[in-house]
Image (cartoon, rainbow, N blue to C red; front, side, top):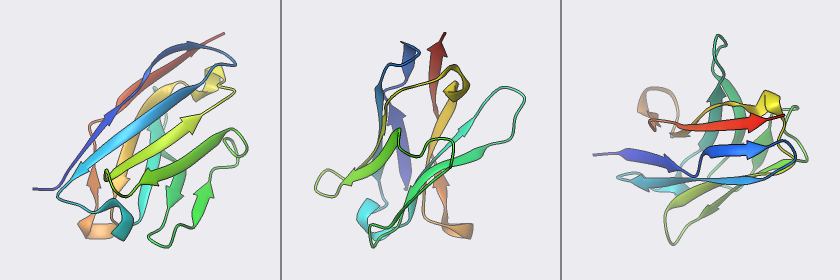
Length: 115
């Protein structure tokens, strides 16, 4: 059974940092396109960052230069390092593995940035 479990969310002041983790089981992180998405209250879920199996990364313009997506292939974990956090980064952050009909989502982790 494929499963993604996010952790690392929490409450942080503006300008602070957090690192999110996504532990994968039943899906090989290094062999799939993996990504982080977020959904703020009243808004649609949006892409934050992705990494392909070939290690090509892509970021939303709003997080470029502040967030870094990475993975630990040995531990089968996906990370999102978030620096210089802003109140507008407040959202539930979701990990996604695979694509299309074969994609799987985690349950999400709340990130709240106070001003």
